[in-house]
Length: 279
Image (cartoon, rainbow, N blue to C red; front, side, top):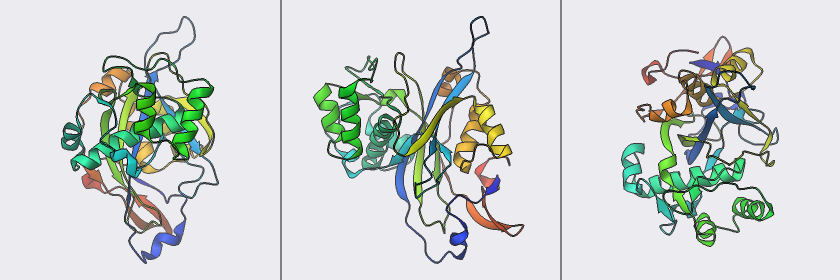
């Protein structure tokens, strides 16, 4: 895959130094397509937010909810249900403490950026609704780090539902970029009863779209996004339902695109050995 260089600009061409990537987690929220009355149901929609143009990394780009790992995401006191940190370590190809942090960051960041919470009162339950002033107060406290994720779950008597997540891919920002992330992508189905909402802050627009329409928008330039987002949507366009996507076998291996000069411009190129046909 070859695409225009990310909004960070051409300053990275010199490769003056190699910035150590920060660990991060991203969650692709899925739901059944919303269809008009009388129309045939089926298909997938993904949730995207457009990063505010004031953001330092990828301003104006469409992305999935997610962000960097917080040191407190490794807290062993986080109430946990589903596959263990050891299980996740094997799936993600990471040390157990990092795997714990990545899973916690995935769920925490999703709640912070969309209002969707992958947690419940027990291993068999999921929170039905996260709207209301009390939930909003907790969400903001998580964002400003005055409340830890472990304390948030404990206070509400909730457990992290790690079984609701599926490991999807692993992307690392190219060498030479001034801001770099080592990001695990997860997929999750929007829990019944919960709704995403425009929570503001880092995003100035949110949308639910069919993956194929997202890719079309990326190709015609109406939906700017980085290669991992476009690639993920192209992959998801092959599935007829959220359930089939969640049941798909995935091989999680690091993908490290490269910055190359192509036709006088800096472009992000995904190496062919990543197993990804060109977009």
